[in-house]
Image (cartoon, rainbow, N blue to C red; front, side, top):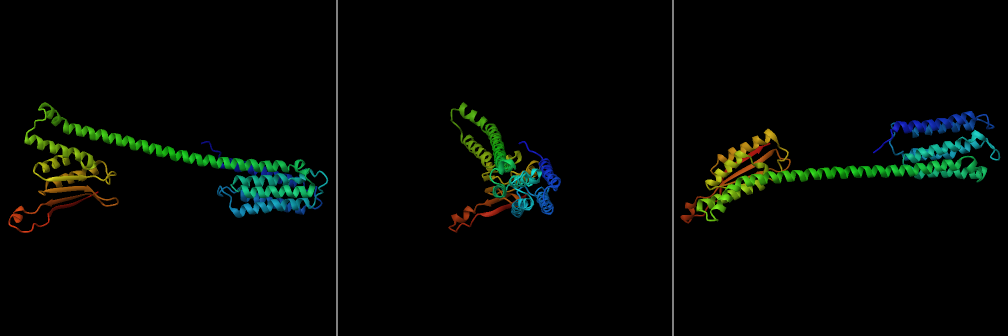
Length: 336
């Protein structure tokens, strides 16, 4: 979006305001008594400096906007108190353009309602003092047009700014959505390739034998199915060491469950390998009948929790005794 430096805008407004001050000083010989005109120049200068202060916020404070309106009502009263409204006063009516400039600044700084009040006060004063015909000859209509243009431009620029922010937000959301879709696609491709690598040999064997498998081959299919489920549910809990230890545990009769709930997605590189190697060592070092490994909750200092349970002794049930609850054979919290 094309932007205009604020310093340039302030400089142009300051030049216009200084020009009006110089016109007021130049025409001090026309009023019967220059005192009120000098006071009007000083008040206008103070209001302009406050309105164009470089470090001020874009939206003009309400107290300053009311002050500018009061200045626009006071300046004409001070200046024309020493002028004759029935004659052409030349540059002595410098206050008309000055009021228009000050209200234009007020409107540009997002106080359009009070800018219209100040411009309306100028119109009413001119009609009362010199008649409706003076609105054109003294330049009052031009000052009102300045204010109108400033209000329209301020609203248009504000709308353009809102639209630009909305477009930027939409673009950022679209970029994030695209990145997420690409990540999902990559994830699917990786999981599919891993699944094909695991299952393809057994699938070819099933085809070759026409589905007539031995008991050992059927059991191997069950192991492969569990491994495929690990690729879906385990996700980042898997590396080659974990896969080998999980398969070894299943071959000895253990039930292994891997659950990745997405809470370790921020762990990458060597740190993730350290966590997974620790998990593989824990699975390989236990004789538990049931092993559950899952990621910890958000905000936890633990990356993965591993629990191993050993079933009750079957001989107790055979003797008619109540079977105890499964015993905890392994409890491990792997830190981040």
